[in-house]
Amino acid sequence: MTSPIRPIDKLIALCAEAARQFGDDPSAIADFVDAGIKELPKPEQRQLREQLALLTDQSQSQRSPS
Image (tube, rainbow, N blue to C red; front, side):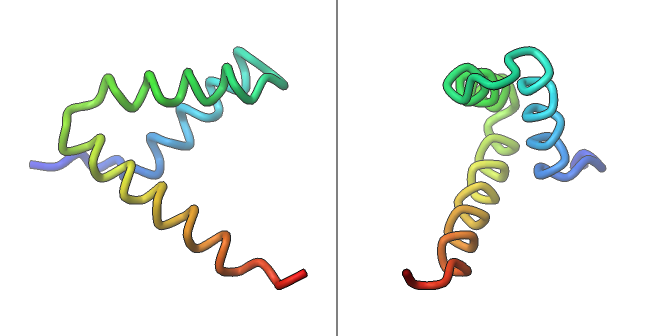
């Protein structure tokens, strides 16, 4: 049975907690989020990283050319 919490919801929670703890330190936030992802079971890690890849690709394709 899969968790009712979607992977993106877990990512949002990790990012919110990281921002709360580290404020304006992007490196510390990224490290915290990465460590949080590594604590998840392997299937959840894979799902979350796949969603991150999709979000990253989507955000770059929506940018207008300079």
